[in-house]
Length: 203
Image (tube, rainbow, N blue to C red):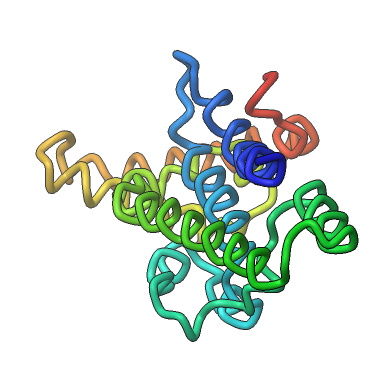
């Protein structure tokens, strides 16, 4: 029971910061994709092989990882259950209170729980939506650190979606892109440190 509780606590620590951060009325859309990507990746790294995760560098590739494919899993003995849980299991084994097969069954059940959790996150993830994936062009940190062409690419994809949805007139898109480029040159570059050090939690 103690091991189960601490495993649940360990997983919750990967999720709670995200849930807490987004319980707000502030406009958080520009940060959503990066934060979701980070949370999902942290959970997947617990049971997916490192070489698979290394290939999943983009949001799309991360969502495309088949988390139900057993060949993508690390060995059950290596599943990351959290530091405290691992310590408890070692102590139980050393004191011969549980057998190796029982511990392996527990590890397997924890992995299956992680698989089910990530599967649900992949299915329901806002990362599938065009706006969520591309609103990062409004993230001040991205404005300061990313290449202009990459930022403008996200803006163009956002505008294309808004035009398609009838939210803006396509005749206005060129002007919007130009204004954004001027903002990067005239404001962001002249105040680089303020943008680069922006904290979405406190600023």
